[in-house]
Length: 306
Image (tube, rainbow, N blue to C red):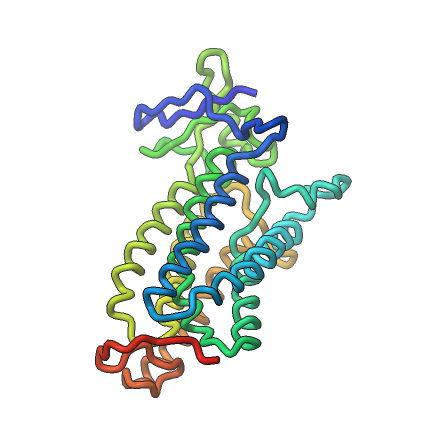
């Protein structure tokens, strides 16, 4: 398989972009490496943010173990459930996640449920915890989408836009190659190349913009849960439009709708509803739907309740 990747309109040409490396006789995908880096960095960042805000960082270390396990399980179940056709007759592939096949919304849903259960059992402030993990979550998404680049996946229809990406047609899944791509195949150095829209890159940019906004807005946050809900709204809105262009959409069983767009819309509606409730009923001093993080900008450290 040829390993060339080009961005012709940006004059970027890479001749040898592999999907994996061989380490001591074991093949490890770049997707897997980036996933591991995201997990380790995410834990370290979250513990640091927790410590800076007067929380008990050790609690986040304990929480991370459960979130990682159930998040990966949720991501895979979501992918397998809505992409079931590709596993028929290849049931063992269900358990192979080294080369991808993890759906973010599955991980997010499972992760949120895990956080709620953990906080309930430990007597922790769940909305404060969710606010604290958002930056690490976004960095994890950015690294995960970079993994899509190495896997030659999560791209959109044939395009001539400035970010258009060229891939050897034999380096991507046959099911992801559309008729329009086949009609516009370009032969470069004897290799049949398709030109696609890099949807994963747009999502990287989206997550980076949200991350910058969140890091700035944290200084002005009033209500616990505000950061998390703003993240859900902004990511859901962006993901809805990015998903429109993807060719590898997972779809619902009924009406055959893009499942991630359905989840994005529902999550935005729910998050906006919760924000409206707390903004309308709160006065910045603890009378909102969520307990407040600050009351008239008093500099008090908040710790977990035990």
